[in-house]
Image (cartoon, rainbow, N blue to C red):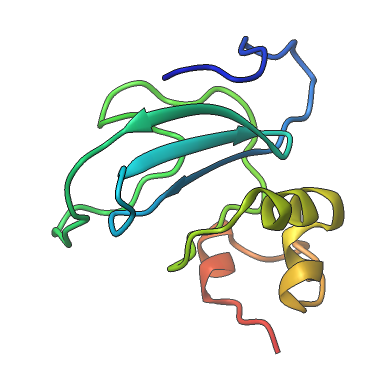
Amino acid sequence: MEPRASSCVPEKKTWIHFAATYDSKAKNEHLIVYVNGVQAGVSTRPGKITATENPVEIGRWGGGSFFVGIIDEAAIFNIVLGEEDLQTIMDQGLAKVLGGAPVSPVGMLASTWSKLKYE
């Protein structure tokens, strides 16, 4: 990746907002990474996205190493979000931007969170 902003591992107990976008229909087919709402890197990734039987994994790189930390408000969109969209999500929170109401996690299993829907 070609870093545009300072790229380093954050200090422990430091919150960051991380997002990546990819548009296979774009002329240059770039994967763009954003850290705290600012573009931090670009990488050319030619080729179309294809459906497979493999599960989607968040917090794991290529079936190998795992992210060490807490992941909150994970989302996958079927449109490419811009820097302004990502900054709004970072500032206001995903639930508020999408019009959802907060849900108390008390007494809920983590696996049921994926079945919750915003009204």
